[in-house]
Length: 452
Picture 1 (cartoon, rainbow, N blue to C red):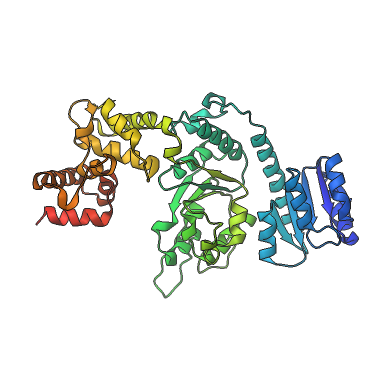
Picture 2: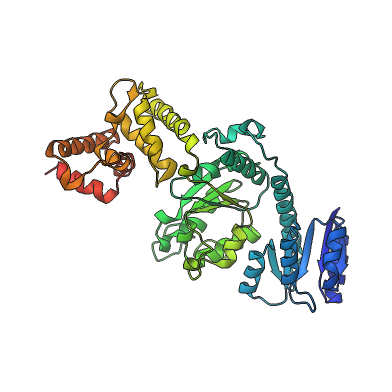
């Protein structure tokens, strides 16, 4: 039996919930109508979840949330509010509530949210109970994280947290700077979850037009007479599995509202249609930005944000894990050698020392690009400083200059390197710009210069 504390000054409300929850034969409810008694009850009894009214005399729901935070009482709280006030609900979630429902409450939806709250409490209880010293070998599903090499204790602890979250079905928010590997971590969570055998679909909302993203996400029914084709959508493609949405801050507000409904109810409709579609999808979303800041107050739904951030993970930047750099550099070298068939197996001590001194504003992805780019001009079986392109030399070698100060011969070598990189990538501008660590615009300019 799951123990539930119901706090509401309205006796009729608490009586209804008590009878309804007892009939499920799943919950063992305890009712409190005087909110002044809650603190003492929480100190002497254990509960799996709390249903809490906000508007009560003497001690409000917000006061109780503050007390629980102050005393570190980690029980998931479901807010019940008689007013559909999103700002008030978001404020309660910011203070630690798991979710909120507006009275009158749909019975079936209440049971679904209570189950999610209890799952959340169990997951975070497991995370809180993690020992201070952990290793990769302690992971239950170590193979799911094989593509994420690390020996950093903070990152290994993050893997254990991610694995605990993977076992549930709640949405997860991943925050990290550009290039830290958010999609790779999302894939690891999927591989460690019960949905492993189902699809993992990754979409970057920054690479899609805001006008079209609604149809690409939810799908689109054919509308006769306007030429629009039917579209399945990412949600349908991820059915039964995991949908990873990167750069979620680029979503328009209307799409955000629809996404929140899918997360809450498991239901959605395609564009140009009113037919409700049921789906079972686990959502993992990511951003490089602090969406709680005032900069996003008008462009990102506070309601959706705090629902997503109930389960959140932060990936540390590469500069905070310097011991990982040699390990990652050799991992990317082996990975690229296998992909290209090149017999390059070593990184010279001089180049490795240079790589250690660089700050990596684009994090792990930038290191991967540097290694891949250096392999284009490597001689023999070892990458060394001479393997670096002029642009990369300028970025990572202190005092190295470019532009008007580059001698003509070096500039010619740079153009030659750009051309060889384009040939290596089969003319793919996006791949080549990544390997060269320059923008598409700069690559286009250099390409025009080559062909003059």
